[in-house]
Amino acid sequence: MAKTKPGRKDLDSYTIKGTNKIVRRTFIFTLAATFFVLDCVFSFLFLVFLQTPYVAKVEKIEADHRNNVKVRVRWYYRPEESIGGRRQFHGVKELFLSDHYDVQSAHTIEGKCTVHTFKNYTKLENVGAEDYFCRFEYKAATGGFTPDRVAVYCKCEMPYNPDDLMVQCEGCKDWFHPSCMGMTIEEAKKLDHFLCSDCSSDDDTRRSLNSFPVSPAAAEEKVLLSHLSALMMKYI
Image 1 (cartoon, rainbow, N blue to C red):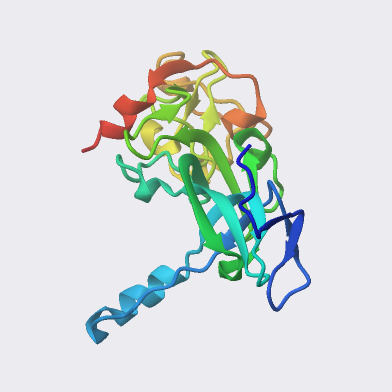
Image 2 (tube, rainbow, N blue to C red; image 1 turned 180 degrees about the vertical axis):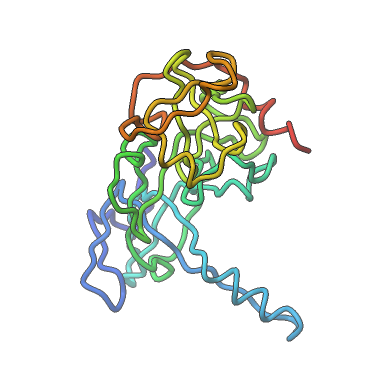
């Protein structure tokens, strides 16, 4: 653990300015981004960007002799900030825990949020504005991920995106995107028993009852593992 410099003291907590919210070490929080607008042509783009806060994990809180409080943070990256960019299997609220550390003024903290494990996120009945999830750690310099293998589903062999509806085949137990099976979302929601084209004849592919789980997180999985790096480069 890094030693505190002379004239500084470690703090157990910090109250976010203008609120009664308290941030402690290991808490996850959002930070405001500060920009200097150099040209009015770009002002709209900057305003749009500022609506999306940065997310980081508090590693240390420290105050100097003037009581200026700073926090040492570990950044979460969004998929579009990674080397491979955003892919279709990335959820809207997905973050990567990076190896990028930084020191920020505590005044940049906007509020607290929760970064769930992937499994816990899929169990949320209601996803709030302050709910995110993380299933990968990310090396900012190399673009590498941990774990480097991920379960894939459907004929398209893509990882599960919790924002997308999937249906499970009663035969092979694999999960499929309705669009990959020639169905609409509305048709898929009416299914109870479903057999993929490999497990049934064309006449038996669709059946209409109403009780099968609609996500890989809701039942036991039969999965294929794929290298994440290959998936990230698949559509470049």
